[in-house]
Image (tube, rainbow, N blue to C red; front, side, top):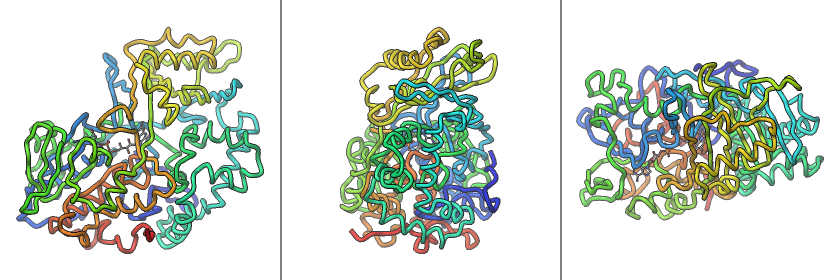
Length: 557
Ligand SMILES: Cc1cc2nc3c(=O)[nH]c(=O)nc-3n(C[C@H](O)[C@H](O)[C@H](O)COP(=O)(O)OP(=O)(O)OC[C@H]3O[C@@H](n4cnc5c(N)ncnc54)[C@H](O)[C@@H]3O)c2cc1C
């Protein structure tokens, strides 16, 4: 899918900064390529821990540079882009991780387009793709096609949010992003960072001039219904900086789903032959370099006396590398992987360990057909709609796979305390709980009678290979994020800390959005290229070449 047309000056808002405004999308699309490494290092093995999107983007790009990536995976390839097929229903999946991708994710879409995957607008609340939306709060149910169909309270809330954001110069920042005006963007953003690092999203809403004029109920409804994709009260304790990034880079608008499932992106990169790779024969792919499957999960990372990094897998096999890229969640470096302490500074360990994860649960059912489009003869309305509620289910999403095809209902997608309520329950009970909540909203619709096949559920926090869905930075976490993000710049590190790189959602400035994971993985590619003695093309400088000029603001501790 090509990126959509932009605003005022015709350029789109992309996830360009704001912390590190480097044009990753241009870098990876440039005809000069990402650079070159000395011929004597061609074929050199580099370990990539984790076959999620960040691991596989890095492995793919490193392969093109003539390196031999050795990918390790402890669980399923694709990581948190996990599309679980419903048994028997060809091409119909439950998206257990990432499922709606803002078109501002321009580096991610570079790979989506490369793989020729089809995308469609995601059926978010109050969008054309959803058709209709039901908002059910405190027992009152409202049916709407768009915001204007809801009672005035909802428009007041939406207007207050827009005005509150202007208090942080939202439009000016978006214009700077559109224009890729780094100087203006940095000056506006760097003013917000110290002001808001210590403060929560809720603090911002409650103390904004716009919401201060309104009732508590307005704040509450804002939390329950949110902006763009659904309720945001689960994020109220998070650092406000994180929310600014989401809205300023349009993460929360114009989202698409990937037809057939998001896991096709990492899995596609695994199989995709590298076009004109350095060193490797035409047709080489990550799959062909690995005899088909990644190596097993990693159990240990240590430094050998000759300076190389030794990676031991769970079956006890040790291989030695000049460079290692770690893309799994950072807590796993203390729970799943025995990682030598001297590989990172004490300050970096603090950052890795303080990472805070959000919980998330989803439960899906396959249904015989998209019955929700049937019209209620009394009202002429859809019998069921995309539903936002303060009940247990929180968000219910309806996926129409076309007439004659089974439909999919995500009965409930929730975060934090709402996800924890589901945690101890088996899938059948989750379905029952969700159906019972939805029955109160749709007393005349027998959803259960449409269910076919087995339901599918996930709680990311219950999986030992994840321990949570994604990072959600708390107030005061900016420093930790800055340390992790800047770690790919290693020239000033002591030799015993060089050669091990970090990438992925935990390192990203926009956690919970795949683009951030992709961008950190491209930083790591630059770091590894540099570590192996390579350089970028003068016409296409990489993130490390311009880091000193664009670097995220650094605080004194
Ligand atoms: C519920 C949910 C909803 C989301 N929704 C969206 C969305 O709508 N839009 C969006 O843009 N993004 C969304 N995201 C975020 C997006 O999915 C992530 O940012 C991205 O997939 C993270 O990729 P990654 O490579 O950083 O990590 P991962 O995908 O977690 O990859 C890391 C890999 O490391 C593996 N691993 C763990 N331990 C080891 C070990 N010891 N050895 C080897 N391998 C190991 C793991 O199994 C995993 O495969 C969502 C995520 C979740 C969980």
